[in-house]
Image (tube, rainbow, N blue to C red):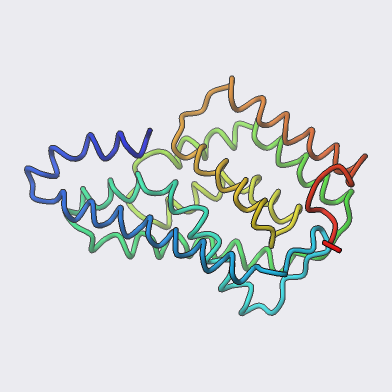
Length: 232
């Protein structure tokens, strides 16, 4: 709804200024890049999901895959910000720089993930998931989520705000299985929803509690959680 509102609200002004077509082109290009990134990520991740025992492969492989994953997961939720940027700039020329700097911030997160990640056990995975759930309830999370939905001038700043907003969910993905298409899709839905929908306790608190509950379940009964163990 947020994306539709941005398109609807911007269309009359953009039409009068002769910029509706570039704005629509920016939206099409952004969503097209996200869709293509999903295809590439799914193909590259095939056969690599080993649950909590997943290995990342070489740095070059993981870095390229991580950028594809971030483009697939993050760009749909970034579309309103990109539309505003294209409208303000009067065209699509500012969009590639915005997208590039936005993904560059997430690429740096990927470097940190590669440096710190190790195959791990259920207790570690459960602890990270529980911490992600607790983070959803913190003022820090609310601050970054609010800023991630606000107008920003650069993809770099937008990326920093969105990392702060989504870092708990992304660490949850890494803990469960960074090469799992299923968990990637689940986290992507949550990330996009939080970018497009305003914060509401009626939704956010149950989600946070559900994440904490998932973490507890991983610790006490990991066999009940699909995708944690290597497929036979």
